Amino acid sequence: MSVSPLSLTRPMYNLQNTFAFNFDTVGQDGQATSRSLAALIIIVQIFLDHFLDKVEKGRSYSEDQVEVYESLASKLTSQFKVEGRACIFRFICELQQHPIGRWTLAGHLLTLLFTPRVVEKDGDAELLKEYLVAQVLGEKENVDCGSLYGSCPFSVFNYFDSFPNTTSTAYTGEEENILVL
Image (cartoon, rainbow, N blue to C red; front, side, top):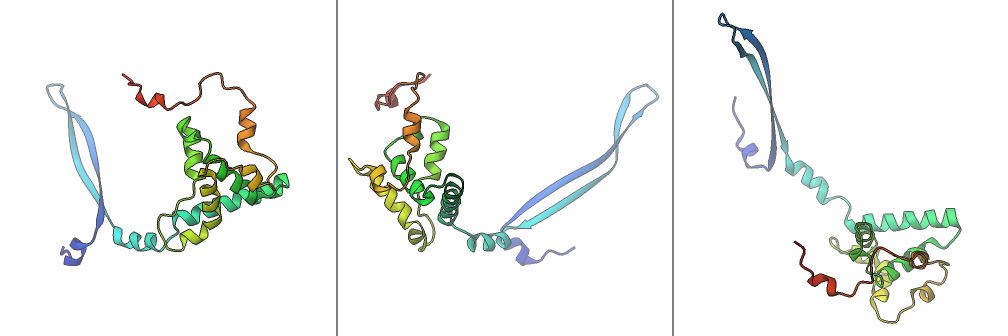
């Protein structure tokens, strides 16, 4: 069998599975011996450049973020009869003022999801423009996100503030210097 020189220069991922057909025999001395009748080797080559073309033409992270934000806004509007987009903007703004990403894994995941990121394409900044404005406003001192996005009647953070946290103390920044053994 001949191999094309082109196939050796393309990025590929090889999978190899071996199936052996074993059986045991017992010799005259009573010892069991394992023998192999045949082995079947299956090799699968996946040419990665075929998939990379599709990935490069795919969606960006920012496009996915906008879709998540718009989907949540639509749900808030239809189920709770509130201005969904304003609530998403308010949450993004308030999230910058509450470091929940430092407190729990769930907080870290929410921070990752609701912090707009422009990472790939030139048009991503335009897609996320309003969300980025909410983020920047939230990062400023003495900004009242509730006033800026007043058409959203509630704050997720006000809801959580109504429950006392008895398991931890306020974050002071000194915790970073603790040595854990």
